[in-house]
Image (cartoon, rainbow, N blue to C red):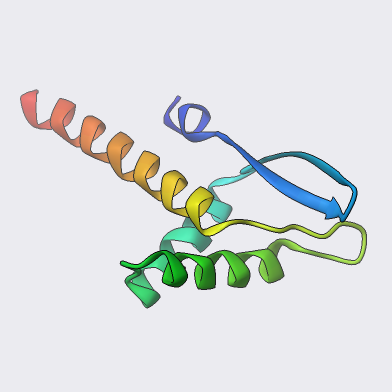
Length: 94
């Protein structure tokens, strides 16, 4: 399924001494990323860092802290767009 193929791993920091993999657990997380990208229209790395900071705050809670990097957000968005284009091209051929 498309949703499963969109899942990827990002590193996050739970505290200053450990890291673990973060999987985008739902489509809502991808939508949150896409919403921030549409709002900010990032081009420069510092603009992607701003999006990463915003998403880090959004996904963090009292139990765990999430820390994204701009590059990870950009790569995730690139994968989402590539998958969309691939699916769109398939549907146009039908």
